[in-house]
Image 1: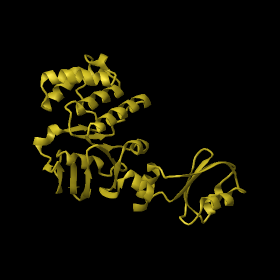
Image 2: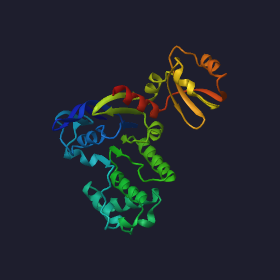
Image 3: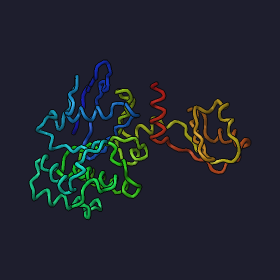
Image 4: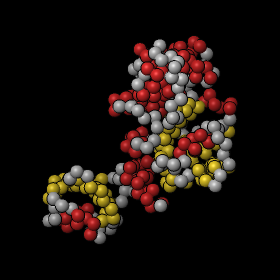
Length: 297
């Protein structure tokens, strides 16, 4: 288990990480979410001991994360850092050696992972000759090839088309089945919603909310409805029953006050607009994300 306790990191007068505490259990995907500049990457780099915290501690299986544990960790950074003039196999080999693997292991695992990510034919090509998405696959391989216990993925789906996004999702779920400890940092709320068991939402270095995704959705469930319509619905701005709403192409998602019954609300609007479809929904993670950040500002 990874434990982060009262973590603080400052840069001058700026507190980039402000007293964060959380834990990540094996067999779970832990989503670290937040807007740009929230402190996610600083938190990750502090966990990895790339930068030193001002206070707090990070424990992996009750041991401090020092150089002795580096080979137990796989990190896929948001920024790309491959040697572009080198061949794919040479880059993987070099980085795998740094993680303590021997030549025989590296050859076997390189072939396995290139095949798994559907790019075995690029083994002897230079990195710069590959597309952005295929370069991302190589960097992904370098993060997982040494079979680490803790995996930290920072925007792992960047540069992928939908087919390859699904491929990487499937691989991450396979790693989860093998009992890995996984942290996923992403701006893609729909992806986090599908993959993460627990989340930590941070803003300005502070925790905004945390917990299991199911509990958070229940907490923020409130009174949410969705309906498809024909007509004009500016009247929503004037209804006391409505806390907030979002309009899409002839669809509306409305957050009602807790004491307002959806069927009563439907009766009130049915003579104002033509209702094509009406349903009660749970809030999306994207909606929770936006509302939580707004309420903290």
